[in-house]
Amino acid sequence: MAQKVQKLVAKVPTLLGAAVTYSKPRLATFWYYARVELVPPSPAEISKAVEAAKGLIRSYQTGRLGQTTVKDAVRNGLVTTEVLMWFFIGECIGKGGLIGYNV
Amino acid sequence: MTGSLCLSRSIMAPPVAVSPLIKTARWSALLIGMLYGKQRFDHLKPIAEEERRVEEAEKKLREEQERIYKQLSEASSDTILK
Image 1 (cartoon, one colour):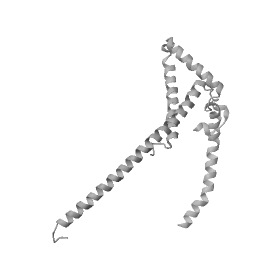
Image 2 (cartoon, each protein chain N blue to C red):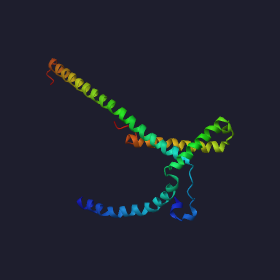
Image 3 (cartoon, each protein chain N blue to C red):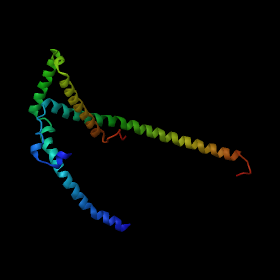
Image 4 (cartoon, rainbow over the protein chains, first blue to last red):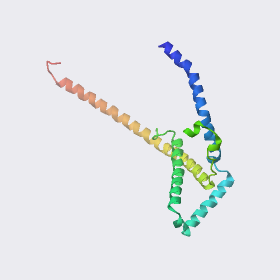
């Protein structure tokens, strides 16, 4: 029994090394995209975002939103859903758990 | 997954320049979610503790009553089949 535990413990560095070799290129790909796409907005971008939001409201008021194609509407719907999902991820972080509140 | 086996940057699409509106919306949604989760947790925690306390007291009471009932039933049952 003790020998088996020893053998397992001796294998741990090789397993860790294999895990690192496996994940390095994938982490590199992730970082390659995340560095451009997932960064939080800089203050200049925040002001641009406010203006874009105002433009959205204006286009809704002038009725131009009714002219979006179905393809565009579906795409915008998917993007909105993704943005809303970030809220739930934030809630999981805030409550300190994945499923339910551990009160 | 096969794309990551032959990992050459020439076949991967370049990263997209995400619109600032989407970026702000995402990260503010994350922030609001974190605040909401923390607030809700702080709201629910004392309620759960109160419920646990009440449950403990009621359980003790119930067990006490069961003990008394058992003692009474044992004392009043006189049979030779003990």
